[in-house]
Length: 221
Length: 221
Image (tube, rainbow over all chains, first blue to last red; front, top):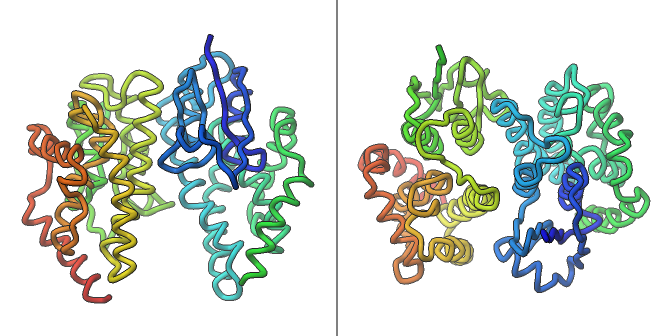
């Protein structure tokens, strides 16, 4: 019998990506909450390179990195809706945007959150430049995946939920309706979809958890 | 008729990744050398987000990012050997290692190259920690892809050729036989394979091009 186990953290958007993909595909799995201040031997041994969650274990074989896991899930379980599009060009574009979120967009957000003064103004401009591309990409579409939630939407949970909360905590406006109407419409559509809604962590609990981290950072500056 | 065009630069290992994949698959293509100090309107319009080479244009549709392009080529042209393995777990691992090279390993190398003194010692330790993982991964294998060149090997051209040259220029020993015997054996096997050999840029010409960049950096420190 296939054994699927996820090492994750309730407060991690990256961990939630994997849970969302498994749920979309209807894959049964055991969820193991990791204490990130005292990582389990199983986590350290399953992801010796990065020592990070999420890690998916399938019949004991470990797969780290959320986007890598999402592709693995899509290729391994054929039931349920596809996560990546079928057409090679659309697949390439989905990979491009997910990579853009993780490698370009999110570091820019983090910089805007932890910086101050002139540096923060510049970081904010950078973020807005990137958000404009995402806003354009969403023009005329309900989701990044078209009519249904796909790879980039799942990857985008950080943007739709975590960053909205952190922006409020830090007191910096980044994703505004006047500048990014399509992106704001996507966030609303995404968070209100019955599938996403039931999987997002409790907003208050997450806010408290993020407050500890981001208020500490901003006091230190 | 399918039109395949590559916007690249002869001195870029990332551009060469795409050429290698196209050649491996036997895809005919038009190569357009970009002047990176004066980028063409076609490049700027094909990759407005990053404004970087390589970009593959297939029937006019642009695909940026070398690893994304490699997957696109593998999914689009079925002739020739596969670039990614067929088994989902092996595919996930190939993606994991290629991502590790680009996002973790290469930035650490660059840091070691441009830093000095205590900072460089630390950066070198970091690089060696990462190289150890790659060395272990190659244990008992000819290539990262097993018996033949695959996704990670193509991604690794930076390591096997560019970084060997830059290390000599900067005067820092990073990939040594005593510490990383499997990795050194892979570099030798890789560079001596008839397929790779014919596609690497001229060593002297590349050395000159890299000298300008890396000697400037080290003088500036």
